[in-house]
Image (cartoon, rainbow, N blue to C red; front, side, top):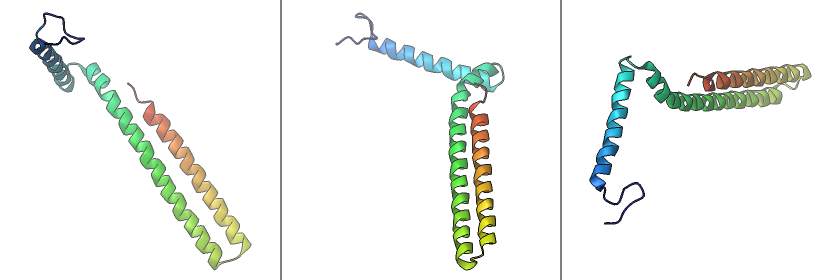
Amino acid sequence: MKTRDWLLEDEDPKLFLIQRGKIRWKRAKLLKKARTGKDSDMLQRISSGNRRNLAKVAVVVVVVAVGVVVAVVVVLVVVVVAVVETAAVVVVVVVVVVAVVEVAAVVVIVLSSLLLKLPS
């Protein structure tokens, strides 16, 4: 039988699998303890990666939503300019569009910074 890097020459590969199983069992036991409140620090360490992934997904969702809002506002601007060719209306619509885009950008920045700074 060929020896592998993680096995000693006289070590049985079945023993290695048993050891790996024990490690998985210990991790599962720690998770169970953490869920029951006996070791909340361990739960925080395990779930911090999940929270970071959730934060990234939330930021993407917010960015997509802002993009949709901006697209709708641009379409409305084009329709208003095509229907009413008054300069005052065009100026008001442009100011509103700029304000909406700026507010959306601030919301995205604040949400992303808050979500990514969750305790790890």
